[in-house]
Amino acid sequence: METTQDLLQTKASVIGARRALDALGADVPLIVSVTVETTGTMLLGSEIGAALTALEPLGIDMIGLNCATGPAEMSEHLRYLARHSRIPLSCMPNAGLPVLTSDGAHYPLSPAELADAQETFVRDYGLSLIGGCCGTTPEHLRQVVERVRDLTPTVREPRPEPGAASLYQTVPFRQDTSYMAIGERTNANGSKKFREAMLEARWDDCVEMARDQIREGAHMLDLCVDYVGRDGVADMEELAGRFATASTLPIVLDSTEVEVIRAGLEKLGGRAVINSVNYEDGDGPESRFAKVTRLAQEHGAALIALTIDEEGQARTVEHKVAIAERLIEDLTGNWGIQESDILIDTLTFTICTGQEESRKDGIATIEAIRELKRRHPDVQTTLGLSNISFGLNPAARILLNSVFLDECVKAGLDSAIVHASKILPIARFDDEQVTTALDLIYDRRAEGLPTRCRS
Image 1 (cartoon, one colour):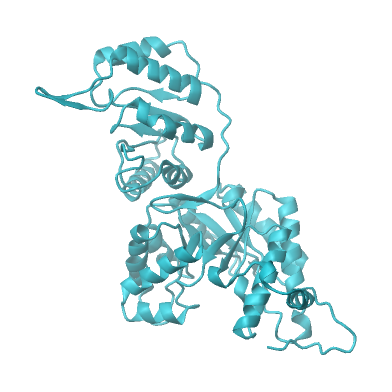
Image 2 (image 1 turned 120 degrees about the vertical axis):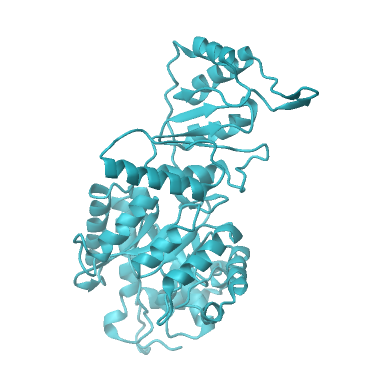
């Protein structure tokens, strides 16, 4: 696939080619060459990082650049690919940027200049496949071949940056200074405002809610359209199709229905995260786990995996970690998914019921995260945060959610599904408030105080 300008079209081409190869029992290399304009992005606005994040997980054999510009304009994009791509690289530049003359378009780069550029790229960026595009002649290519004939591409030591991508940009799963915030408000089950807008087909209002979360500091958006009596596939096609171009953030596709997830994947040009898989109905070939994982594998999506098995939701540290180990071994060993593309959710439950059996649930979540990160530092961790404070009044929920999130991040949490504007820095609370929240989280009881949680 060459001269590709649209990531959704490119992904569709790769998936179609892979299906055709599988049907024929054939095995040939799949190479993708994207076209980056003089603006520094692909025609639809995609940065090179978004292209790499979206396309490499599809199992392609090589990625590179061709057309639109000469080698000078490609250099920084090739530098990025050389630094981050696990797979070999290619480059087919034009013979410079065309100059309009009385005789039509003229490409100014001489054969020797193209050969100079390609030699530099092979030496500096370790390119494996080179050539020329518009404006290049047999003499251009003859000199390129002569120049690089005896060169061995420089051995690269790439530093992959696991993440998701919108059509426009890539977002790493590991944020430099904080956790990765997944906005929870575009969820028909969790947001009445969003649900009502969806039910009334006020699509622009749904998009505006997504944009609100961008302004509030979210890094990704959780999109859930599941609602009793609705055509989830149609709703997902409508909203994922709109979010694909209206949102600069990657989308987390949140559904219990396999076909709804598929509908979302087929609308998103970037790289999505699927929420979620678990072992509730086992791991057989017809299980939901297998069906969703197969979708993730084909579409190159990352996966949120919940610590739920055939016995139910894990409550203890040991059970959470045991299911997480099973998930990681299964997804990596049987499905070829990278550890760094798995987001384990160790689950949290409300600690505000006053029931004795739930008082240590917060501790179990924190310690499971800590142990999981010790065993698997490359695996991502995530959490549906707001469950912890269910039953409290709004002000108390903000306090408990913020303090609990801080404790989880200290234990190694990488991301959380949150209402980003309602998570506050710990410094915004006074010491007594923080101590009270910590007492609740760690089940620290003072003599003579009531043991039930007050809202």
